[in-house]
Image 1 (spheres, helix red, strand yellow):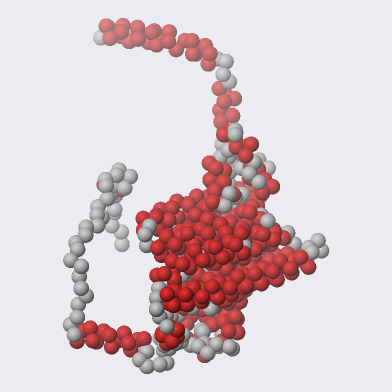
Image 2: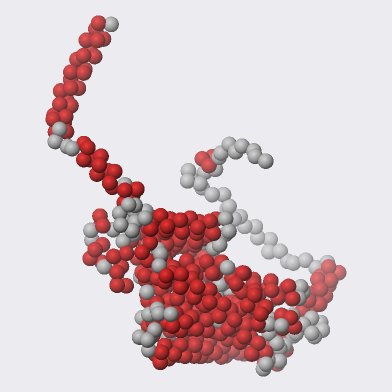
Length: 422
Length: 113
């Protein structure tokens, strides 16, 4: 026992000798100051600085979006990452996103050199700012889209065009309440009901509105089954809703393969600013229809699109900082956005009614509302409302024509706004 | 609002709507031409194409009736599709990965009402 004590004493003495130099240096460090600095660096301490308490409001907004995405299943694939991006960017002190790196609508590349001042979300946001994510998503959308119903009934293009009236009417409405041209163009595109197009155009025209516009676009797209039916019923009679349309003809594989090539060349030559969106959409479609690159087609439909959706959602959500989101502009955007959706739906229905004045084979006006490009939700709404009026009526494939025409139409409208206002 | 040049705004709107319609109308024309060219190339006459496209649900036999007749004939004649007799194996088994292993995600769930 005595020997053990002796050994222990020697070990303690040796350890003391080793620690002594460090302990001597430690005297120079202000322990109290270090703890105070640590406490001041926490996010809780930052909450009391200036207007940082607004971050708590934004965290509550993010939680509301989580509720809508998880419980109410409102476009969860995008709303959930958007809400999480919103949560991350509003954590004081975390420094994940710096709006000043993208101030004035430009990427301040020089500031990216100092990695200490750049957050993770700043790097991810570059994909939005440079217009990469929306285009990749459009490749996936193209690979998932069947243009067969549109080719079988090309008149559907007109309904897809009519639904874009909502974009331009909203553009005028936004100008009237005081938005600039670029902002009004970005708000108007909500009426196209096409998330990637809305994000693409807004990131080019008015990046400061990206958060509110993305939230409005995706929230309203999820609410298509709620927003559209009253408008459709209000503008049509029971007799019109009961119209049974003639069966669509078969479309050959050759037609489906030539279509994306023709559209890309034609639209890009006429409207070069729409080329990135249309080109990517048609590239994906050609992969699908050609049938020779099945692996690529599956990849763009699944893995590539899913990965891009995560990055797009998080980085778009990151732009919704308290200063950019909590203002009257956001409220105005949310209000005008729903108007844009309504006008787009109404435009398609009214043009279908107008076309019926001249057509021998009548079309059911309900398919007009599918011209807003919320694929395939808007087509399903046409089907459901049509079956309420006539249970034996199947409008789904007929509505898919205007629906996919709406995707092309909204991309074209975005190209026009970009060339005029960009 | 006063700072807005409404003339320009209306020009953008008019040009925008006009261009969308013009472009899509021309696309209708292009697609119709494309369809005609393909049908001409494949030896289909115009009259046949026209007849195909004008089969309406108010004419008999309707497409639904045609499907019913075809199904009845198929069952009556006891016809079967010709099988290619080629057996292919599509591998559905995934390689083991600790990231997706079921073992690591097993939980003892308590039963609740």
